[in-house]
Length: 116
Image (cartoon, rainbow, N blue to C red; front, side, top):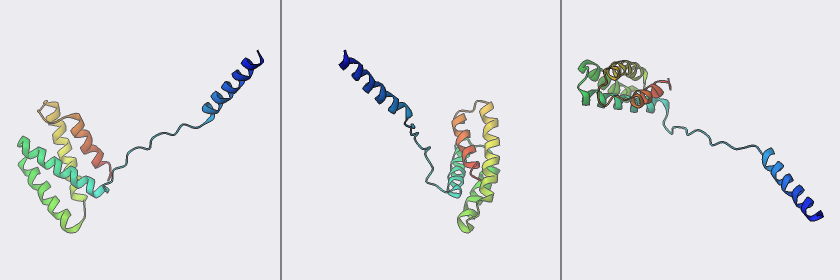
């Protein structure tokens, strides 16, 4: 019987040690892109989707111009404004159930916009 009680205490001590140890959580994945690179990618994605769906040619040309401007001067302010306008348009199209405009797509653009 002495062996059985000694075995129980050894197991309970091991169980207590496991409970006391802090659990390590995985760190959230960080994007390797800078905020400016993220908004540039979002602008390119928006432009491609606008062209694919043949939506708002004026906005398409403005995004194209802002992308060229950003590549020349490195100032992403115009890109943020254009992506914001594109998100509003995509939300309207999503409400109309336009094929290719998904909640995930709009969410990714919003995440890029949040890097401002």
